[in-house]
Length: 73
Image (cartoon, rainbow, N blue to C red; front, side, top):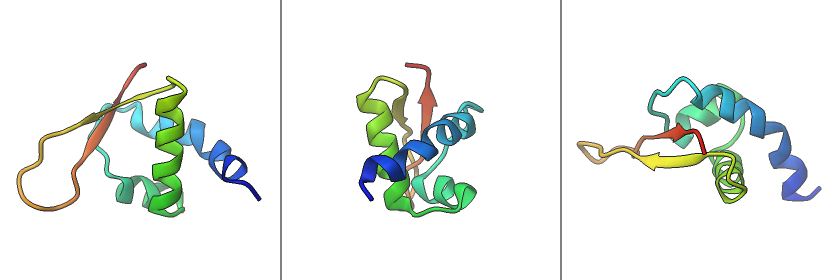
């Protein structure tokens, strides 16, 4: 099975989750969707490349995962 088949079902669900405007990490998205961080990362990259979303890095204090949020593309 190609990555495209694995990523496609995540597209709408990712956009729906991120539409709340809150800060997300790939870990939190993966947990919410019941999938791996790698799958989420690939899906986010694909959606951004297709112009379906724009990822905005959020400055983070500390050394934990850097959160990001979605802005309408």
